[in-house]
Image 1: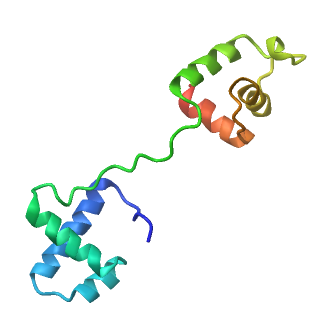
Image 2: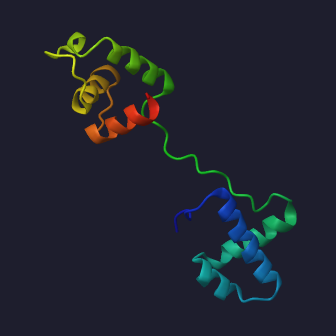
Length: 125
């Protein structure tokens, strides 16, 4: 099974409820089926809860490692500020495909133009 979807607080709340139900005598099989987890997870959660106060705390999911570092993004911004003609285009219009080409030329990383739009919007605003 993959990591369940939810905020760390929601995941922790779910684990605490599962341990509470087990402590009240509810069947681990039933709890596991309802929560969509394996039974051993329930026992691991109960043991973690008993062994340390923050034993059921969920860690934030870090997500994928960005393919361009913050330093590279700063460099990309500098490159884009030079203008499109400085990079060989006939006019100053920056399009996502053009930016994708600049990224590939300078950093060796290929991105789909739609992803380039997201990078520009989220990380270079």
